[in-house]
Image (cartoon, rainbow, N blue to C red; front, side, top):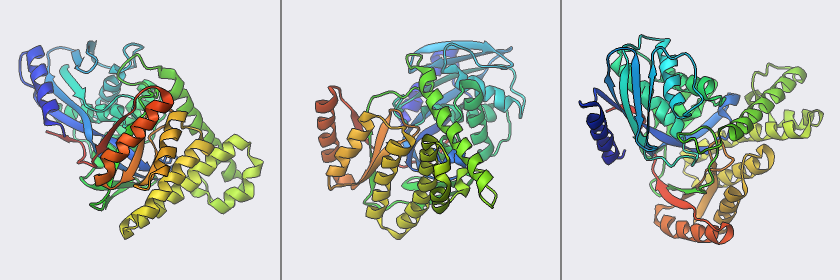
Amino acid sequence: MNTALIETIKQAHTQRFGAPPAVVAYAPGRVEILGNHTDYNEGFVLSAAIDLGVGLALSPAGGAACTVQALDIPEEISFDLPVTAPVKRPLWVNYVRGVVNKLGARGRIEPGFQATFAGDIPMGAGLSSSAALEIATALALARLYKIAVAPLELAKIGQAAENDFTGARCGLLDQISSLNGEPEALVFTDFRSLKVETVPLAAEICFLLVDTCVKHSLPGFADALRPGEVVSAYNDRRAQCERASAFFASVLDHPVTALRDVSGDEWHAFAARLDPITARRAAHIIWENARVLEATRLLRAGDVRAFGELMFQSHHSSQTNFENSCPELDFIVAQARLLPQVLGARLSGGGFGGSVVLMLDPRDADQVGQTIASAFVHKFGHTCTTRVIRPAAGARVL
């Protein structure tokens, strides 16, 4: 956690509102290591909370008015309680408004409040700054208004806020990862049972994040993003998965409630009866779930090279079956494949831009990062950014 960031938030809050905050909460972003779009298909994901996040300071205020200042933009917005619907502008405030609405259904949020937040997660990098803001807001509000909510319910509140107030039909991956992170470990989640386990990482492994600086457009903190474009593509992928699941439920002789319930053999037997696009979407999910389970076994056995190969396979499936990659992401993965120091690489998050996560020995990170950045600027004419990211502790009230 960036302690300087937290101090900046506290000082800005005190200066703006005339008193120190009553509550400060912090929530990390997340990186998805394996399990792309499997969460809303009731499948499996390996992820990690990371050492970048969002902090939020909160104080009570009189009356029904709420004031939120976003230091990163910078912008300040006020609204009155109760919150019943999203607003058209600015988009970022809907993450806060959504949490107020959903948490307010479980406890009394009044009188109003004053909030200040900032983060060090690069926006649009595929590291889920949105979920970090949702969880930090939920934690702080629950503490301030003395609303008892279990961590899983907090995750669901964040998901519901994003679903209903931004239009993105996301699963629970981002929120669960932010809440359940542990240092130097991955988070394994079964998204049917919502059981969470941590899988320790070997000391000789780290993750290098390469941000393409191509901004995916799930509605972020800044209105400069094109909010509808990728939300639509993301929601289309989810709808295609649901159509595939319904088809397999109609032809298989066992219950199918999600693509998690369909085997590879069953896909081969019946996929020709689906339209080709929907069949490819289903193939990605079915074999991605298998990759997550095998990767978890390999990680526990210490076979990091075989684990990394599954990351490469995952990206190829995202590129060809799920079609949620882009030329910049594909180029970075192809370059990583040429470097013997890189054990695995794939896009991280929803896709359509954002970042690639590489697995390698920390001693090789600087050299690999420089090599890929040089090739990237030569190819595309603009820079990408690289940084080592560390699996970190989950969200908390400070």
